[in-house]
Image 1 (cartoon, one colour):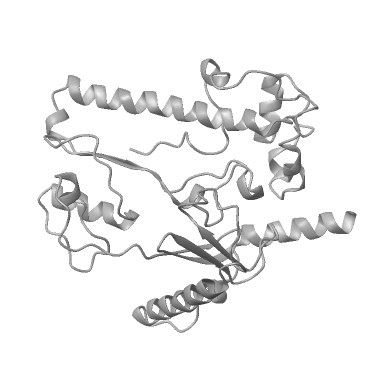
Image 2 (cartoon, one colour):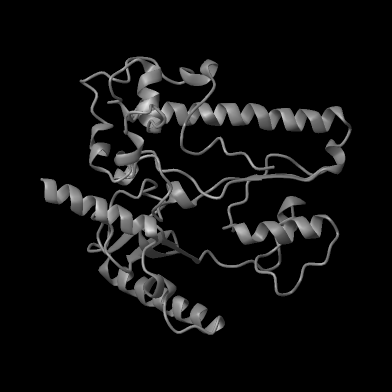
Length: 306
C-alpha cells in the first residue's frame, strides 16, 4: 500500500492541524522561516493566488489557513509534518486492526518503509528531500513476521534492495541469483546471518545536487561533481556517531582520512562503471536534472535583480 501523506504539501485534516503547535506562526519576532524566501522553491511555495484564483503556493495556503499574512516560524511547518505522521500512524493502525479482525494477522507479513526522509530546515534545506545527509537517506524499516519475537532492533546497514529478496524468501519463492540485495529473514527470526556485508555504503544524488557519498566506519564523505545552489563545500566529512546532525565538517581536521575515503569512493565508482560496461560517471555524463538546472537559473535571476 502506498501512502502519500508524508510529503509536501503538508496539508492535514483540521483536527490534526494544531496537534503539535501552539502560538502564532506569523509572529514577526520569530524568524526561522525567513531564510527560505531566498530559496528557489519559494517562487512556487509562497506564490499568492493569480488573477483567476486557481493557484496558491502550499505554504502560502498554510498561512491563509492559519490566519496570518505569512509564515515566520519554521516550526509551524515542522508541526504540520508531525501531524501528517500522526495521521498516517492512525491509518496504518487501521490496517493492522483489520488484519486482526479478519483473522489474517497470523498469515500476513508486514513491512513498513519509505523511499526518503525529509530535511525540515537543517543545512538550509527547507522541507524537501535532496542532499545526502542522513535526515534524507536514513529511512525507517519496520517488519512484523507472524510468530516471531517483537521489539528486535537490527544495527546492521539495511538497503532498499534487501526488501524484495526478503519478501520472496518469506513467501517461499526462490530468489533469482541476479537480484541485488540480501534477504533479511535470518534477522527476522532472531538469527544473525553467517555472513553480512560490511558497513560500507555508497549513495548518490543527481537532482538538485550532483553528489556521491561514501559511508564507512562511522564517517561519511560527501563529494560534489559540480557546485550546488546552496553553496555547500565540494567535499564534506562527518563523524556520524558524534555528529548525528552532520553539522561539523571535518574535511580539514581529518584531511588524511578524507583523502583515503575519497580514493576509496572513486575506486568503488569505477568498479560499478565496469560492472555495467560504462566508462563515464553518470553524474558527469547527465549533469543536473532539469529541476536542478531550473533552480540555478532562478538564483541567477535573483542575483541579477539584486
